[in-house]
Amino acid sequence: MKKYLPKLILSLLIAGGFSPLVSQAQIPATSVSPSGYGDRQFDMDTIYSAKRIREDDKMYQIGVWRRIDLREKYNMPLYGSGDTKSNGIVNQIYDAIVEENALEVFADEDFTQPLSIAEFQENFWLNATGDSIFSKQLYYLDFKEDFVFDKHHSDMVFDIKYLELVMPSETNSNAGQKTIAFIRYKDFYNHFKDHPDARWINFQNQARSLTYDQAFETRLFRSVVRKFTNSEEALIADLVAVDHPNPEMQAYVDALNFEYKLLEYENSLWEW
Image (cartoon, rainbow, N blue to C red; front, side):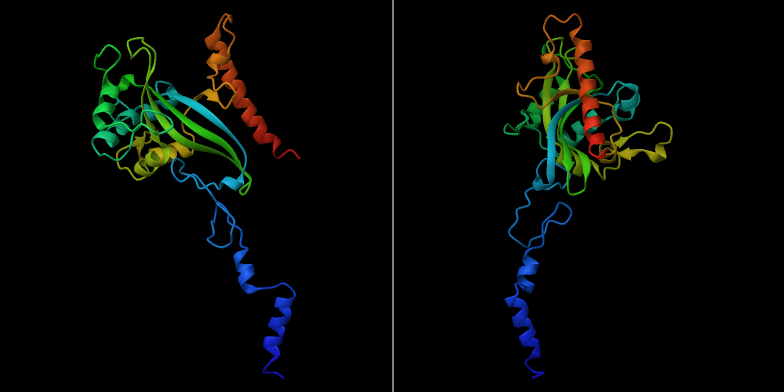
């Protein structure tokens, strides 16, 4: 009787709906430990994003387009030091593309039009009239991110997708701003996370300067929202009434209001 007892118990468990194989196959996949077991899908952005957020874990998401003005005092650690700003983020990105051939660049935000090194260099150094410029004159750094509520971690996340190098209108002979190139944020993150020279410069204590990935992930910059997901696919400035007496100031106020709405949304999640 003892000989057949284990088989009898196993048969009863299987009859009751238990199976060690089925139990193993039902382990859910999450953004923390995407499992290979089971038939649940765990799609995630592995092309642009440096974060591992499973699509099924995104309970709320809105796209946000921001601009960093490197001339602002708070952004000086990214702008660089000295008159040429040769150790600043714009020149470091240029070197990573041209000298190190470490980053792919594209002409469009859909990343369907790759740029050659020669095309990138022409976009970078020449303005609308064909005059040469200095890298310090490229003081705008735009980027697009998703503001996401990750339900698995119960946390709001800024998930950056790409960077856009922009030539300001003043630098571009007042012919309007010009897009120089688009770069995947994941490529930027992976290249600069261990870079020995490209640093967010701590002018008070250089021993505590940070890599660019650390600076971006801890949000050590000041940016202004230029656009958010809307039905018109319009910039905030374009949503201001054409007859407004001070449209630039109103666009700035509207951008701040949007920032406050994001904060209010995050705070309201925990009120109940």
